[in-house]
Length: 440
Image 1 (tube, rainbow, N blue to C red):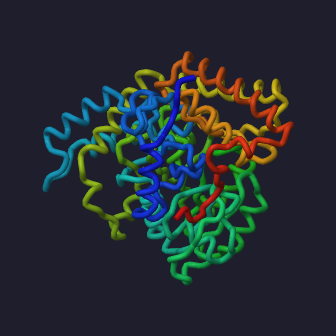
Image 2: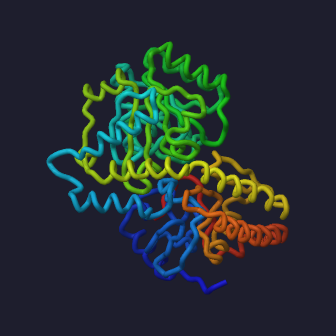
Image 3: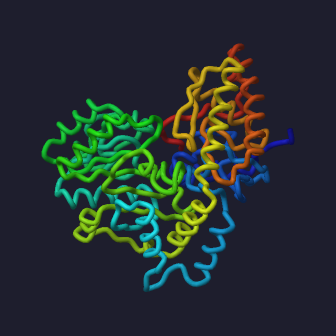
């Protein structure tokens, strides 16, 4: 095992903590989500599944894969070539890029139920656009939702009416600070696969029901009866059913996961994988609903730049041509099986969950401490790794052989330290954080 240090990375973290609120722009990339004092945080180069930090340590990334955005792998040559050509020809002008029309056509081709498309550049804003369109269509204000849908006001409003309402949705402790109190009651949560929870929310919304929002899948396979009651309620009330495909799309098929899971949305929202790391998001839907965007004010300068649509078109073309989802699922199944077998081998109690290309596991006891130890020891062995694994098309079976061999070694170390009650005293950094909290 080569000598490992992150002196430059840690120095930049301290500088960032003093001048950037929260240190990073994304909660999921903060070092405390892994182990502050150990996680390198910043990268110098990323290519394929290899990442080089500021101290020239090179890692195989078997963690969150750019938070699921770089579905093909980092700095994909084919996509970069087309993006560079677009930059040379001009990424923005007084006129609009024709690629946005081509991208709309491609997404509608992949999703025959949809008739119109709009574009933005990030997932959170795209979800806000979808909700704005739905509220314009219905003329009503209360949104029922399940799952995690970003940082914007419509979603966080759930925590105004009931503290901790979002805690079971994905990230605990999200603060509604900065939201007008008048938004209380405009977003009502329900639990996935829980018909009673959904029907209670429908009753609470009453005549003000504006939209139903959920992810097609996160940790559990959908119950057909639950799906049926969602569809029936949406149709009966002429309320748009919005599929948040930001995380799930382009993982298990060529497009939204709802295509193979049986969901029948009125609007679907895409981001993350769509641009393979370049900013692009899409809102597609039925014409009678999407056309209401013209009756609302939804517009932004940088939604008209060229790079996003160019990258998305290139990503979709390669994803389909290479049958990327088949490879990604195969890679992820190896990791899922490996985690379970290694945990059993070493007598460690873990719970494995998530959809196959986007996996995670949790330790049954002392999760944050055990996770931090796993993170630090994997870093020493040349892996960006956590209790999460997002597969990328660039992962090879050889990468996974090496990854699981390292997991085997570290699970063995953990088992011994757990038995002795000495995991915490062997941490270099701090235990991992869970949920939203101040970092500086």
